[in-house]
Length: 404
Image 1: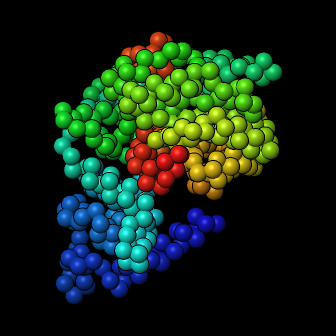
Image 2 (image 1 turned 180 degrees about the vertical axis):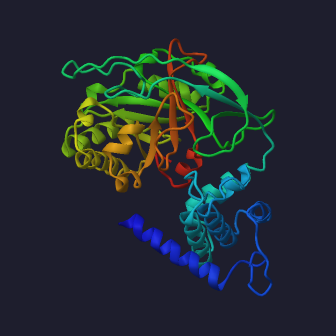
Image 3 (image 1 turned 90 degrees about the vertical axis):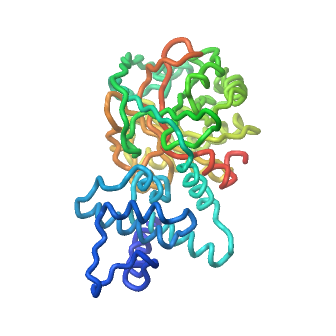
């Protein structure tokens, strides 16, 4: 309901913006008979600073209008990023509403809200000269039901049923350049003199199955972040034995870190219990990346959409109440068929789907796990490979979440 109301308010605000008061230099009047062509928006975006939220709202709305009638490829990569106010990999009415909200906030308080500061930091970083190498990678099947995000057998608890490990093949195909959207391939950005923010961040997720990781080599291999398993289930004894070691060494090597908890919750009560145990394990740590609820076990595949959605809300709401930025992880088909859209709209999403150019999950997501058999210097054997499309460190730190 909140999401629907937000969209309606955004549409009304956008209508008022267009009819009564377009930004100076962007208005198109019937008298003048001037027409803004789709490609012209890129020039207007370049001339608009990161604090001119009112003008950016209009440009977002105009872009959305062009998208709606079939113009979908006129924006440059930079313009697309600039107009994506909410880091959702889409430019729509929600972005226009976001810019208008920030504009109103600034006029009333004389300061910027945390979300606007995160956006401005991202916008400024786009002007930093960088060299970008993009590598397209193809791997095999989608993550199977009942497996941990590591792709390994999830039978740490003898009472739980076993699942077979899936073998996947990774093949480097080509080096190319693509537009930065949720379907963008892996991008590694380097600078000779400074560390810069990126449109796409390259990372991995690990657990005890990777044993002793040489995080210094992982960092030198170009990885930006790591999502580290903290544990699974509803007992403190199920903490991952390598969690503390991985957190300490990954941070020391300069990687941004998040953590995930593999769930076997079969009820709302057990989901809340898992969240409490997760919170106790990660207490005292700071996380630049999200705290992740990993829901994909066989017990969940047999549940109804209502049951799965309730479990997700119970876990995530408990973690959010403790001041954490929470993300829901699962494979694409599970998210598409087992979770209410209204629930997915409430939380950030990390989707797993292998052997595809982009996941079959069409809603907004912040991370994509594209392989379970990657090879990274510093790790023996296979490791999960991930892309992140959001500047999580800026978002999380500016909102004072995850221990910041």
